[in-house]
Length: 347
Ligand code: GDD
Ligand code: MG
View 1: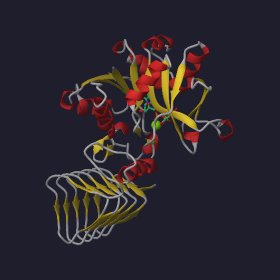
View 2 (view 1 turned 30 degrees about the vertical axis):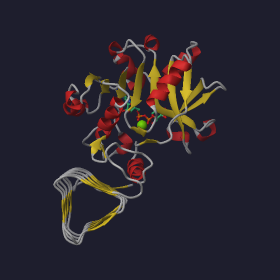
View 3 (view 1 turned 180 degrees about the vertical axis):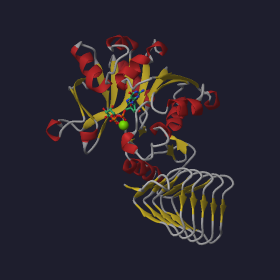
View 4 (view 1 turned 90 degrees about the vertical axis):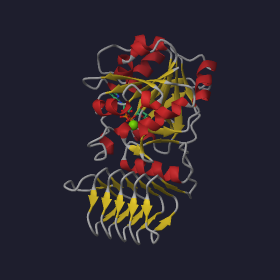
């Protein structure tokens, strides 16, 4: 089975983190989200992936190439202008002549794909949509379904009075290739607002699958931080890392002074230098090639690669983007810091 990732969105709500890199490339525990999601597929025997790109296409193409480095076959289908989620699926049609998976690229979930595929077959569905329950469905696509778990209606980004269910589209689908002929080619189409409702009208069967126990859309800086806190708490497991509210991971080549206080859980990438009397943790994720000065205090924060934090700085509940320098004595609380000359944004 092959899989398609929709990776062409603009990532507007994640700004300024997505000012320089496309949303699917933002690091989750030090590795691009898309890389983590693609590698997860290998565990279920999927080794051929299509990336439907638009914004930041070159960045994604350069990083993944033909996939050889990851032991996968990766194809890139680039849109010159955004075609929307449905248009992007149609645009990749030539790669799919059998049942295939589709993923939104900004989610983390522990969905059991083998179970999902089995369920799709049992329900003899033309499309299966994974759904998950959330407290506030207004930012998502609400799906109503019948007693046999076939979808009957869709409401994307509902107004409060339109929220009839708190089961939402989790951004993971299985498609039979025959439904692709129902999507018009070469134009902007939304799979959620147009394709799904039209398929139901035409009598296609869309099954809903309720199998995610952990699910998050990391579409905002708040959610991005939340996802990391959940990983640190052990609510979502990443292969090769084991955090459960405790745990220290140290990458190769780290140089941590003996006076540094570390409060678990903490993740420290490769080639990180931490100087005297710094205090790191709890819930801190530090990328590769980071230099942390004397007396720095970091709590509940994510530091990307190549960052320098000068002596005496304090970072709490803060995200610092790659290659930034936090000046001596800088004090940031609930902030996204992407570069020195742009104003840090409050989370
Ligand atoms: N290639 C391409 N072209 N990809 C696109 C385009 C496009 O024009 N527009 C969006 N995408 C990709 C995004 O990169 C993302 O991976 C995915 O499609 C979904 O787009 P988002 O912009 O993240 O949508 P959303 O979060 O508002 O809503 C979607 O996801 C929710 C779950 O997280 C919908 O599918 C909702 O129904 C769903 O509940
Ligand atoms: Mg999203």
